[in-house]
Length: 255
Ligand SMILES: [Fe+2]
Ligand SMILES: [Fe+2]
Image (cartoon, rainbow, N blue to C red; front, side, top):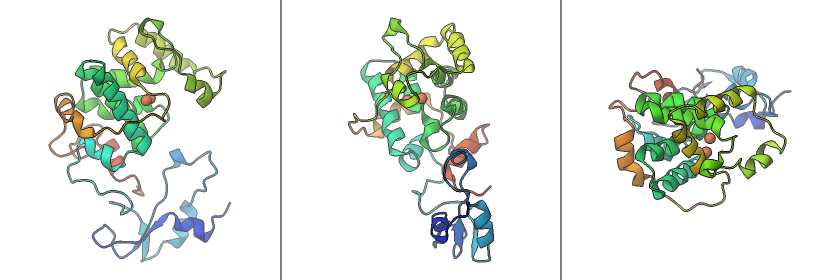
């Protein structure tokens, strides 16, 4: 399928003074993971055909996105990168845990549990999110975030957690989680930190319509005690997952 000139324009940003590659048009080739399998056309070939001295592939800050500080902290990603749904989903979940008197580690885990959906990747989001935050939180918080991926699909009546009604609509009433998720559930249930992962599912929100605005700054102290913000900023501290944070800072980089 060939892409029309108009459609191709959606992938081209005019160079702006004060931004990298100034004076040239900057072309964005979207990451395959969010595009393949959909009707979205891969513009890469057509963009390569447009490449010239005045049109290059984007590297660095995109003027279409809020500019992030040089040393980004956790809440900068909430404010500048996360989609509205994830923003309010994470804060509402953390607030529910806080209002219920849960320990800070649980509030922190709730605040981070879907961080991967914010602006990185959806598939297997619990695993991606856990890996991304692992250098900065306790092992237990990262574990809980990872395991919520599987635990969501399984009821636990001892804590009043039922299979989410919305999942029948999301996935169809006959959806059966794959074997690797079932195995993860069995193993997590036998783990000493099981309840931390389970509590994420309990304070999770399965519908997205109820929302009282929450100021993320209300969590500043809890973040300070439970999330090690690197001096150099997330993305620039050389941690094993710094690249994940950089990808969220510059999601449109060509390479
Ligand atoms: Fe989730
Ligand atoms: Fe969630």
